[in-house]
Image (cartoon, rainbow, N blue to C red; front, side):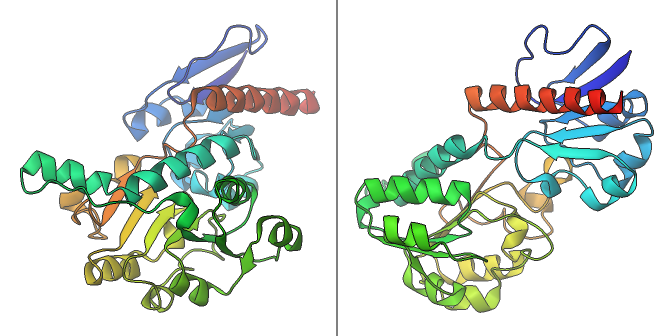
Length: 315
């Protein structure tokens, strides 16, 4: 009987796998050891939880043949180079989270424009009653770092609301989108210097880590709002901290962090020193953007299908 490890806080429906598959579901893993104890007997793995499969994990997974990440960014959750070297087949569920992430991004954009996080903090402390009028989405100038499926969907929705000030930087130009959405292509430094909001939707990898560094942020508006729904490492943490400390009206939202899950020890043991900043400057969440119920169900169904395809190919 094949053992399939599934991680993630969602329901698994009946009859997803044939009877000769044993499903082990760790819904909310609380420690690495909880997963490490099971890995030696697992042949298939659907990763929908918070863990990162490092070299240590992959060395323990001596029988692992197939791994499917529920999402797009494989390298955010797996040491892909080492997994490939070990002969593990790795797949993802690409573009299934586009609508969910776009919806979440626009919601967070509205919330940060309204200074909601600062208001919550001030009300709790009794130190102020924030009621600053916010800019409408239609009147924003928005820059996109990366123009893949998610960036395109957000740009389309902003354009439909009347937003005309849309710019983008991407490793490849998008002439069709430029024409249909009025997008303006710009280099990174010039774009960051001229927009109200910067949305980061770029694949995290060695080529993009540290892309937004001190040189880029030095040119940014002192009131720039940054929303990063991709790998935190695309923004240099030292540069980000310096920018936010120097510009008290700037703000950054990151869905994820440089130290994640069990490696995250909170604001009092943060090697990057960012979590000690006020929520007026920085808010970090735990990969919530794609956690929309129907989206997660579809991603799991696709992941299960990929596992079954892999096992049939072997036969």
